[in-house]
Image (cartoon, rainbow, N blue to C red; front, side, top):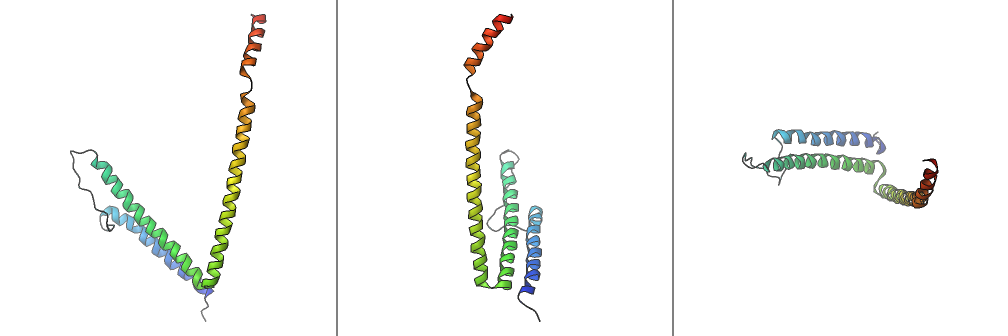
Length: 146
């Protein structure tokens, strides 16, 4: 008998393979076989050197769209497989716990950055010191030896 948790891995695998197939469309896009809806291919004009940048942006945007679609497909598959395994109520609880943990870690990281910044400022103040006094003492000692 097939149980709900046993379906989690196959669903995740199918969506992972589907995501790789969607990402492969970026290669087909560069070959001209998989256009992105709403993205028009630029017309090449040899006399205008700025058109080179337009064609580069066209390919960069097209590849980014296909990779983003692949990532969204994989993410949707992970959520769907987890939903099938544990149900909607437990999935919502897990997502809330995950978000709360991310917020807690973000607060810790922010506090660490603030402490590092304060330590760096304190070290900078200590290092700066009184350079004028050191110059005067060095000059007096230099006069005695030369």
